[in-house]
Image (tube, rainbow, N blue to C red; front, top):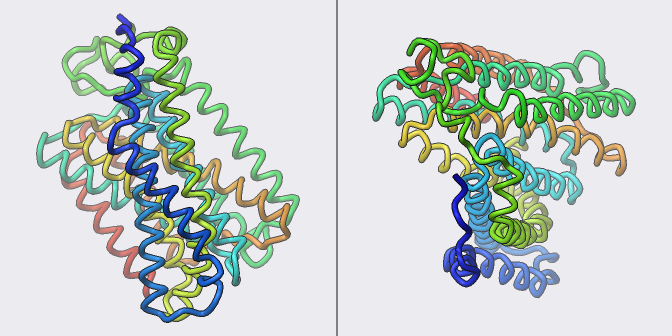
Length: 397
């Protein structure tokens, strides 16, 4: 049954909590400070000062991103899966697109920033985040069962979209970049397939993305293959329309707070891009390190959310968060960046190096094996973490 909505005064105090207001206030104070200091930051500044200012901006963006994730998580709990997880992953994708676009359109040459960021996101999500979740979840709860039907849908999309993003531009494009017509067609087809996937995920196949309750379904405990093996209370879940009707005020207030917390990230990203470019140039660091930094900023809060889910044994929520986030990144970030490149005439190089392509292929294979297993254990997590360590080594080689 649907819970009655809280009184309006209680609702406002709950949504506009101290933590939410602090995150919101810090974001907007940082925006005001950046505007006041913009003339000074436009001039060459000592390396120590540059590092401190960049670290401060990155810290504020991470704090604000945590606020966005907190509101998205609250919406997710209210809406339930798969709608809630979708809200969370799309919120993260918006932040990622903003940061990539800021660096891409900023000073210097950043033709590979989208590739580097999305590759870093792939490694962080599939190996670091997922590996850590399977490790801690397996150590605490033993063997865990995924809903293999839903996980299979994610993995099919990941394999196809990864190939379109990182491998195909090398074979049919020019210098690792799609030609304009190719970019347009690839972007349209990618978004169309993703839209179809979302439609199925939220309607006929929604049960495939819910937790498996072993021993309670009509299937044997070892068969976690579909809706019949998922939550037996699924049929009693409140319809989305009814949830919105009862909790309209909370959903609208949290959505407004989410947007208000995202805006400082948008405004600060321009300042971060210029300082990041200057800092990496002074250090002589690999260009791809900028993409790794963006990926870490964006997905640190969601990684913490996934780890918390793993500690409570919600392994399908872990899969929904990790796999869903990467599918959204490949299906929305890449087409958006391609459109930005077409509109601004900015080159977008997506073709990856042989080493990274090999590592991505191995990662996808290991992820597919984990997702198809009747149970996942801490050993699966350890292998994913091994692959992330190798990615870090490749990054600096």
